Length: 64
Image 1 (cartoon, rainbow, N blue to C red):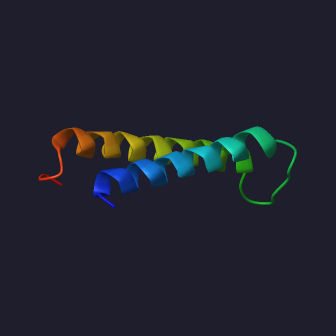
Image 2 (cartoon, helix red, strand yellow):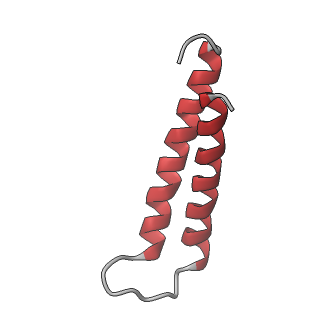
């Protein structure tokens, strides 16, 4: 598995988990953190990973 494919896969999965947290945990009360905010942070991190994977894919397999 190339680094670009790995980053694209991890980023997409992280984004989807963050989206699920954002959409479905609005009514869950936790003492310290809000799960919807954690979902937003995970969505941003997933987006960054996807963007980095696209940059790596555009550069080609010889440059990492």
